[in-house]
Image 1 (tube, rainbow, N blue to C red):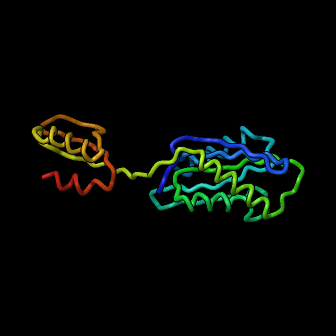
Image 2 (image 1 turned 60 degrees about the horizontal axis):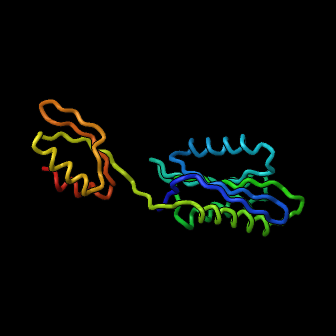
Image 3 (image 1 turned 45 degrees about the vertical axis):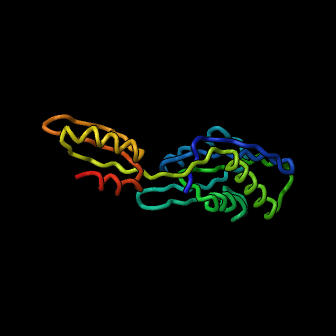
Length: 186
């Protein structure tokens, strides 16, 4: 799976209609809805604001798309298919349309929305998604330095530490490195 690093925007004119493609990273469905609310505020006179999003949550993958008044299946679904095809998560892709007076037909709308979604995805900075885990540990003082070295090798970091009779830590590292950390710990 892959994620988008930063928001990005492209614009295309198709038969006098103006299409603005916007891609934005989101960590939750509430964040995606906030992005969409902001788009409605920024483009109040748009004919349609069509969107699709895929968000990885604790309950699984949350997927939504909306045609925003366009004929059913001609707007949100083509955008969603690009997200699904590229295995993108934790993002929202919206296409803002200003109607130019020329009807595109169902096939024309599907192509236009799909092409703008594809263009904004290609313009975005996309990286592999890495799921992280947080682990609470209690160690003796003499184990701290070897643990710090091991964490560097496993792309992890110490989030918090408390020094008393022993050292209590909260560490964060990629989930796929948890087994290696467990093998290192006594």
